[in-house]
Image 1 (tube, helix red, strand yellow):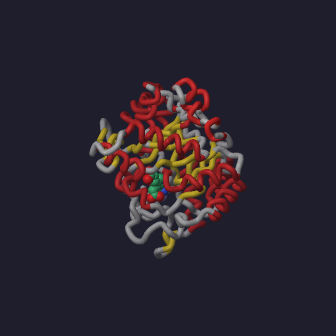
Image 2 (tube, protein in one colour):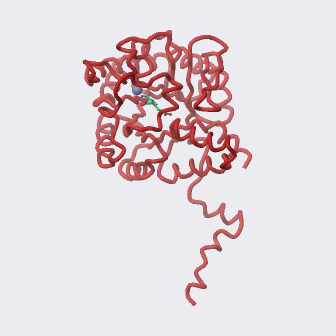
Image 3 (tube, protein in one colour):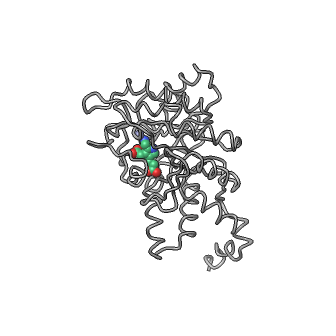
Amino acid sequence: MYMQKLRPRRMRISAGVRDMVRETELSVKDFVYPIFVVPGEHVREEIPSMPGCYHLSVDNAVKLAQEIYELGIPSVEVFGLPEYKDEIGSSAWDMKSPVQRAIAAIKEAVPELVIVGDVCLCQYTSHGHCGKLCGHYVDNDETLKLLQKVAVSQAKAGADIIAPSDMMDGRVAAIREALDGDGFMNVSIMSYAVKYASGYYGPFRDAADSAPQFGDRKQYQMDPANVQEALKEVDLDVAEGADIIMVKPALAYLDVVRRVRDHIHHPVAVYNVSGEYAMVKAAAQNGWIDEKRIVLETLTGMKRAGADIIITYHAIEAAKWMAEA
Ligand code: PBG
Ligand code: ZN
């Protein structure tokens, strides 16, 4: 009898009521769109493992940045493929490399767009690891010196936010010190604080030509089984001066996102990574899922889990779908 009076369905009875009681609202302002810049001019080549994403030369990256801004997306993250690779990844801090040129050109053309620079070495080293090698070991403290150079070069180019994705210990403090030392005290750090050694990065490594030539990244990226360790990483990066804390990947780690959100007062970002994107695209291309519904549902799930910022390759399509809705 009592149960008859308790009718949660009343709050779902119409679109108007559902709108009134909705707890999580996805916004285009939550998004960061990652772009891949390559050498050359007039290049716009679709990335086979990431349909709808492109390798862009600087001129086309600027055009896309303009479109992104017009859609209301506040930010892009710039990744690059360099003209040359060597043992220490020195093209990562070359001001003439595609990333530095793209950052400067986008900043000039679309100054309001927030530019995030990805700081790592794996796209730039001949061996594909995220730092300087000592034998087969990635030398932590030697790598920090190189990451400092990369961060400063991107800040010089015009990056608003520096996002280190290498997972070396102490890199947030090292980068903060280098940025401040060069007068970039207002450039923020978005730390990939909780980055797991994940199979979901596969398509990105094809796109960025950054797969390790031997071994794997398990000595620096985290074990997918751990969450206490995630909170330890977060505490360290907060103490070192990170402004935004990221969890990556997103989908298989939403419990981690919630734990991190409840643990700190900093903005929390998630990276909806390439493998998560590719799975959705493949299923959609086969007609097995309704892509629009699935993408908006997934992104809403990330927000509900506690993400304030969502880095996603679906940003452009999602922004268009949300404008229709
Ligand atoms: C490089 C880097 C990776 C991603 C972002 N920066 C891959 C990796 O660690 O191998 C993954 C992004 C994605 O899969 O979308 N440090
Ligand atoms: Zn890397």
